[in-house]
Length: 143
Image (cartoon, rainbow, N blue to C red; front, side, top):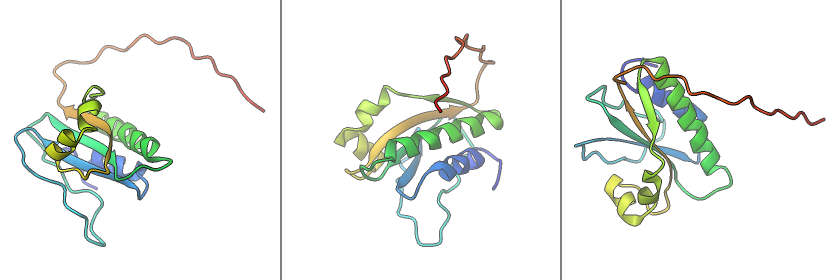
């Protein structure tokens, strides 16, 4: 596993996806389309190491009982690994509405049965992010 650019964070995301999941990488100005993975090929291909920002869309390939959860775990792994190599991330939640339309899926070359879950922008942060104030969690133990 290489640590240049997005290879490590993407691989970290792939580790969280079950066999039902799929990742699609795109970047502004790129017309690259995802292609089927031949048997024995790696689950992800290296994405460009720049220029940033890059859009990574984590999506499921069909409806299923754990598609959203698998993709959310992949997104979490991707975001943590990106932070670990000095990159910033932002889950663009408002984009999900568009990406769930046929026009949005066509724009990224996704199949009609695709379930877009996590559109994430990855790039180099301009400044340090201040910690967010948190409330103390309420934890209830069962059993």
